[in-house]
Length: 180
Image 1 (spheres, rainbow, N blue to C red):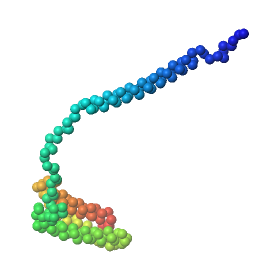
Image 2 (tube, rainbow, N blue to C red):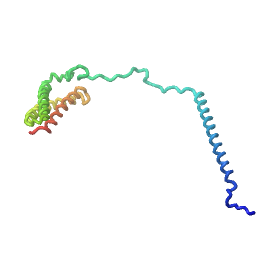
Image 3 (tube, one colour):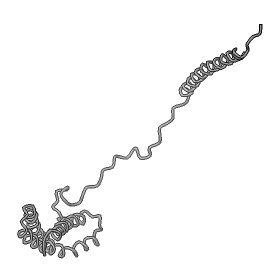
Image 4 (cartoon, rainbow, N blue to C red):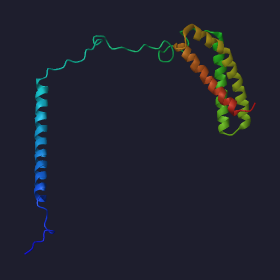
């Protein structure tokens, strides 16, 4: 009887799968064993290695540094400008008086704008502008002289600049908000 060979599986197919499965199992088991040996060797090397000394700290014996204190202003309790003799300067005193009155008028102008009271806004705003402008013009040379004497980073100079910048901000708002 003749046999039909077309329906049978090839002769080496099952054997090839078994070989590949065997190789895969050997690789997995061998890889796990190799990893455990590497970890064991690393822990042995770490235990055998001498302790690494800490990095040298060349300034460790110095006391901790503290920032310098301010020389003027509210942080020290010294009235603003007292150290520089600014409070005694008649130009500065007159400018502060004008600016104080101008800032009060400025606040009234701001309140009038909130109420939509345009005539009061213009009246108070223009008067505030005049007083603040005069204070700014009279202290411009004083600020430049202080910068020349002490430098821009001096606390007294910074305080003068801060006050004058506040005055500038008021004038800037008034120029935008009031009629001429």
